[in-house]
Image (tube, rainbow, N blue to C red; front, top):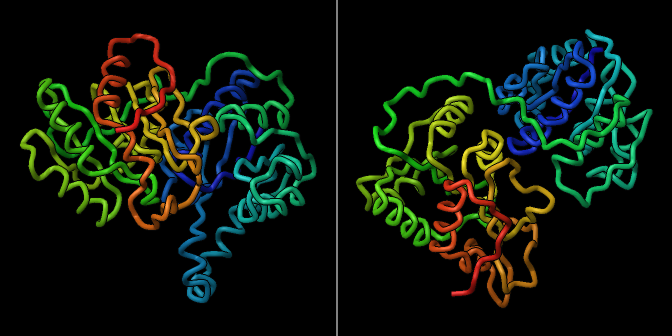
Amino acid sequence: MKVLLVKLTSMGDLVQALPALSDAQKAYPDISFDWAVDESFAEIPHWHAAVQRTLTTAHRRWRATLRQVWKSGELGRFFKDLRSTHYDVVIDGQTNWKSALVTRLARGIKHGPDSHSVSEWVAHLAYRHRHGVSRDQLAVDRWRQLFSQALDYPLPTTPPDFGLSSRQWPQAPFELPASPFLVFVQNASWSNKRWADDHWCELIERAGEQGYEVLLPWGSPDEKAQAESIASSFPHCQVLPRLSLGELAGVLVTSAGAVCVDTGLAHVAAALDVPTVTLYGATDPHLIGATGERVCHVQTVGFDCSPCYKQHCETAGYKGEQAQCMKTIGAHDVWQALVQLQSNAPVIASDATQG
């Protein structure tokens, strides 16, 4: 069976789809997937053994330079590549208008969520077969359910398998610390997801007192500057060089644990079964929480507006870059959650305390 999955972005969303591929591969051992994905995240589909090839889009870049892209023939080459294979099944795993358009242009029987389940209402019109898949559930479960209906196999009740346990990761182009180290992911695409720098500094200090080195990744010049500012006072804290997603996964899998805000690398760390503490304020971990066997979600409390799903904070007369709810998450609570995960003790999602 040959299947095209259309899921263009983002990093965390792509990782959350991997267990559905594992389910399908167990149900149909001869199945193979092509994956339509944005060029920025084209590494991730190939992490799964069931993926044969990727068809890369660049819709953000295309939108900004549409005339040049059209003249260069890049859009035409993508369309030709997309139409070159007739698939047994085409699944839209993103369900907005951009992914629905790619799904509609592909050759094969189209599947996706129904009008009550899509991310953007118009998307369902692109599908021949529409499935009821509640949006009020964890994203990993949502995609597993969609695949089981689209490919007609019983929905597994087993824990999600990301298909990453036996993968060999590329070696990072620098020497990792000789002592145990932690990865703290302080950067996020939304300023409203970030934790306060003084909390990060307190956590880094605690890590050093316990003999850990700390590594800080980044994905943009602004994020690099933020990481360098945080690390500047701590000799045991190092800002990483720019790394590929695979190299970052290789760093994470050899770490003693990770603390992350709600960002793509949190999902990668969790999928690799790294002890991972993830902090949530503007977003809801019950819907998009990082998933794995050694994960703890720490949520803010005391703010009726949380989760707000806004990119900037607007609460109690405040409007700006600093997420006020995230200030309620203390470094002590985060450190205790990480220590508990490292000891393999049962961990449940927790709420932060005020102060």
